[in-house]
Length: 152
Image (tube, rainbow, N blue to C red; front, side, top):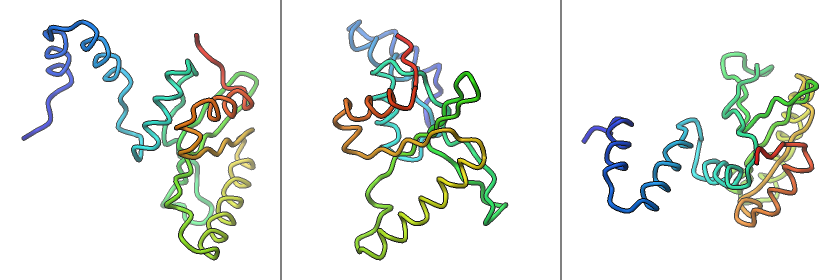
């Protein structure tokens, strides 16, 4: 079955019988974005929206010095006044691996990548985990510390 066009979804929503459900679904659809790589990133973005934060750009590309054909993409990026650029990276545990060697390899690559992003003008890099997203006050503290503005 082909996906429904967005217009058809909105029509179905507005024909629903319960305003509260209709309002929640419409709000959800307003913020959907296919650029999120995974459910963790989508959930993190939903928590950011619930906290009233400025919406980030998603999957922003940077040139890759090791492989120009394959750009580096950051999960979230905010361009703030005063030439301040903040990157947010959702660090799911699967990427770290199961052994100390795998964890060490990932951390080494992450440090190299962070250094490269800073050379490309990124001011601050905020790494956060599933735990930070679930306990949203942890994510909010990191975003506040990085200077991400709240819009309401």
